[in-house]
Length: 131
Image (cartoon, rainbow, N blue to C red; front, top):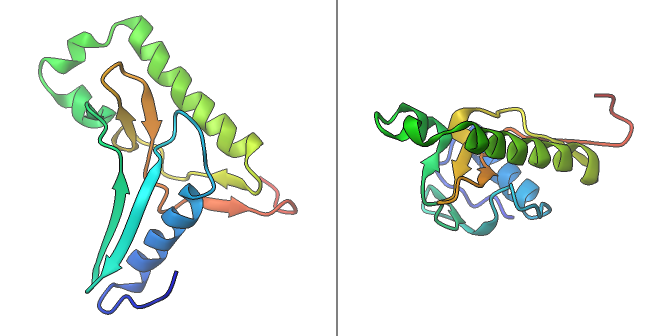
């Protein structure tokens, strides 16, 4: 990853590079898969597969949508997010701490399978770092 970023503010560039570095190492069904990326003429792009329902936050605040979330669906979403976090904390080396889990960073497939997204502020912990 070269730093030919032009006009991109340093904080945005670090977040962009951090997300790429993190997601190229991660493979889990409840974490978004990075398909590609590009940084050209001051613009940064991350390419993911389209996730039908969008964010949990968007879904919750739509007037009719919240009615679809019965208890079984809510447990499915929560369970998927918990599995993703467990994978990041226990199965990745180095351990990954997301640091920005919110309803806006949980994306929902058509069948309400959750995908954790937005790893721009994630932290990779070395084995000698205490949690």
